[in-house]
Image (cartoon, rainbow, N blue to C red; front, side, top):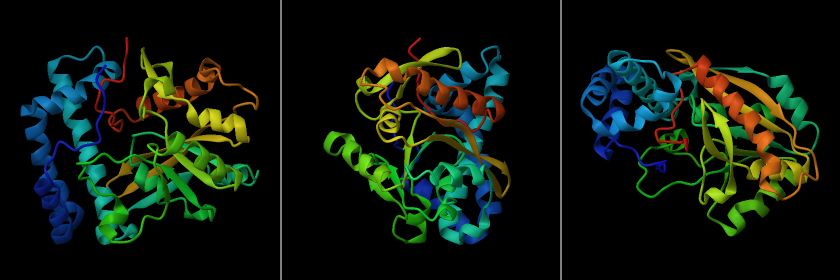
Length: 297
């Protein structure tokens, strides 16, 4: 299994080219340029071919070479569109993207329990669009996020030149930020974490089934849920049109108090998340953006 990296395969000037295209011609011009760039990457880039192959082989195991080429093109194209949409929100304004939320009342009800809420996201759709749509909860949102040096992708608020609307918790901090995350939930706030990638040592994860193989996913969020009583919500976004996204509550996961310290005790709850992610990948096969080999077998 290969480790993942947050660094873009594109160079800084290439990103700036698309930012300029957005400013000059909006989505139409940026998308037009994207079709050409993606065709080149899909046909000739060995790096892109290798990074896309792991997921596509699991999602479409019976595909032949021509089918795989088409799938690789669609996967990279959708990823590029998501990056353009994310930049466009910051450069041209949030009104350029329409977001429809499924499960708003459920989210408010869960938050009303007063134990905080853990949003477990994944690298699918456009999670930045999802996060920018949570203001209706009128509750501080705290984001566990590690940004690798050399990562040149900008978040929407960086394009807009505004401060980050979330409180960032760095997992490289003391005890992986566990104490800070605990305090966030005790205050009844929202904690957002990624549930599909490991940050740091694999000992912080458990093995679960996903797309016909076994992967390691982190379990710290489920341990926090057991300690605080906070509900866990699997919340994913997906692109539904040229200028529209849907945000859907796929599953609410309840981890009983006193589950203990044995990491294996948390496997059933992490597996629930993995099942939600698998459901998403079957509904939206070209909006799953983990470009590394997650699978151990």
